Amino acid sequence: MHDGDVRTLLSRWREDPGATYRTWFLWEERLKNFRSIRRGVAEVVREIEEGTFGVAYKGSSLETVVHSIAEQRQMFRGADHAFLWKPKLRIPDIYENRENQRSFGAFLGTCACCDGAERLVEAIRRLDARKIKGLGPAVANLLYFLHPTLMPPFNTAIVKGYNALAGARVKLGSWDEYLAMREGILRLNAGCGDLLSNDLGAAGGFLFDVGSGRYAAPPGGDDAAARAAWEEDLARAREESARDRKSAAAARETDRTHTEIQGWLRDLGRALGFDVWVAANDRGRPFGAGRLADGCLDSLPGRIDAVPGAEAVRLIDVLWLQRAEGRVAAAFEVEHTTSIYSGIVRLLDLALGAPDQAVRGLFLVAPDDREDEVRAQLVRPAFRRVADLQVRFLPYGELERNREAMARFGQGTRPIEAVARVLA
Image 1 (tube, rainbow, N blue to C red):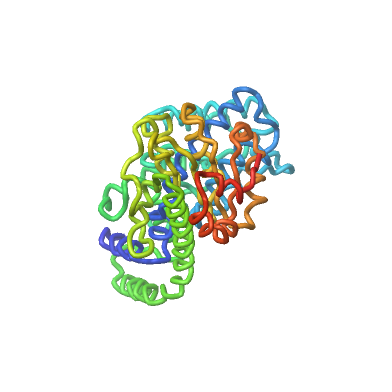
Image 2: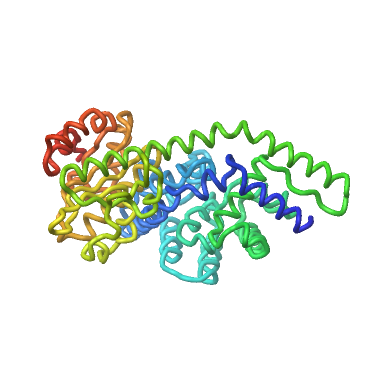
């Protein structure tokens, strides 16, 4: 395989509106989930250490965090399959076997705290030596969200794509095979760094699209006829990508709706007399005749920006702040189709990281038909502190119907509290 062919394919992949580069890797919500997934892993470790993890996947803290990964658009669809309990096979054997469970928890704890690839590989080797049935390299998806520049994501399509591109025979269930594939991905990343990223999710997305059949791998050797046929197929794929514009447009529509709700909350907050903060990674989004951050704070007050978890607080979709005091009066997480879990975690980071703020106005804003999903998330053990914080559910419908009247006649947070529903 010629390096030039790989670069040609990578360039095509970056341009394709339906490929993972644009639909997942550049998706701004992707970045918001890193901290919440890391926090979820820490919760799994804590429960295993304290002996409260339980003996089932369903309802566990592990299900919570893996479900958040599985919601990462097409790249991680089905990521939870490897962790589902299969009673006939008794796998993965981390629910019934307490020693295996402790080893798994120790592995996650080490990986969450360590720096550097060598220590991560050592932790993988120790876990592999335990030979825990059914606990294979699918765990690498957790590692990716802990160390995205060191560990690539893993699934069947990525392995197929790597094998097709590298002419390798990597098998799915072996950590040794995963680590060998990782070395190959690092070489690919080093050779094509200008077309990929330090974040190995880019290379993973590229291999996913090759492995799922979106693109054919370049032919090996110097067969000119095979290469010409491959180039024709690539050109045809470019022409046919119009059929995928529909799904890409749907993804953009999701982002547009999310931005629209943020804009409503921005305008309502200003009308009610608050300073407004818009999530740091959403500030430049087009809205109306300008940008979403128009008329909003350029930076958070120092007392908020210095709290533990401030990185996550800056990503909360909308904050209303008291103008005289710089205190947070209300915080809003808009969850159009994305994981409810990550939004709850960011609200918790604000409320628990800054106790002197005494934030009582915490709102999950979502389509009306997601209320049951929101309530189901809040009964999970990972969110046992939420009951003390009076998180409320604000349906899109109530916001749309009442926002103009609230802006004209309302004052403070009481109007928004009146139409929201207490969840716990």
